[in-house]
Amino acid sequence: MQTKQELLDYWKRTGYHFGQVLLDAFKNIERKQFVLTALQDQAYEDHALPIGHGQTISQPTTVMLMLQALEVKKNHVVLEIGAGSGYNAALLSQLCKKVYTIEIVKEAASFAQKNLCDAGIKNVNVIVGDGSKGLPGKALFDRIVMTAASPEVPRHLLDQLKDPGILVAPVGVGFTQEMIKMVKNKGNVNEEGLGFFSFVPLTGAYGSDKQQ
Image 1: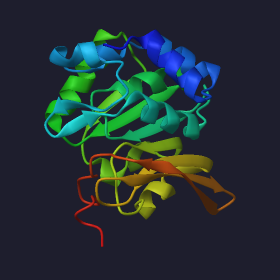
Image 2: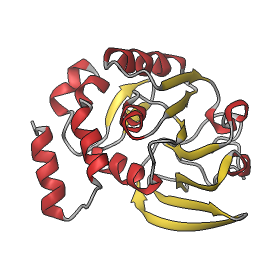
Image 3: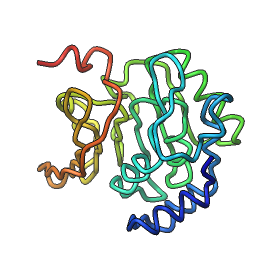
Image 4: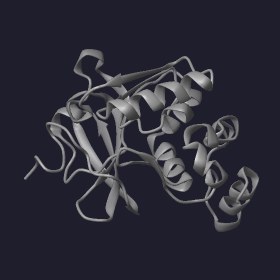
């Protein structure tokens, strides 16, 4: 069983340079509150864990890399597509003003809502719905993060992103996908690859099985 401090030491030892604000958020939020009871002894192991209903909580390093790439600021409103267990949103709650997180699996959304409530987090709104459509009624967003993989980022999600703004998403099919950082600025969108990871596929109207 690895402890939170041992994971922090591992990041330092292996050269991961996460910002202090993000590290403080990681220290403040107990990951074991967002995993299944039977797996709490693995909460700080650096790998993904199942949370039921075909969903997972991503490995801690992947989560931190995604959130660092988002460059979130305290006054930002963030859209997360794929609430999972609520852990990503919990970390984001420490970094920004407001988080909207959409989860298509009703049971997972209920799990996320309970976990966030138990953690005393009040600036996250969990929505049961099709995250592949985004959340046009609350757009525009300062930042958008996708926690499920798609062959490409649906264009309408970029339309829901402020200019300037940043969207981070896993893109690709198969077991591994490339994490892409998309920076929107003055009408242009620049992409940067951040490495290869493994995510569950995006589902819904614009999910992986719907895109050509």
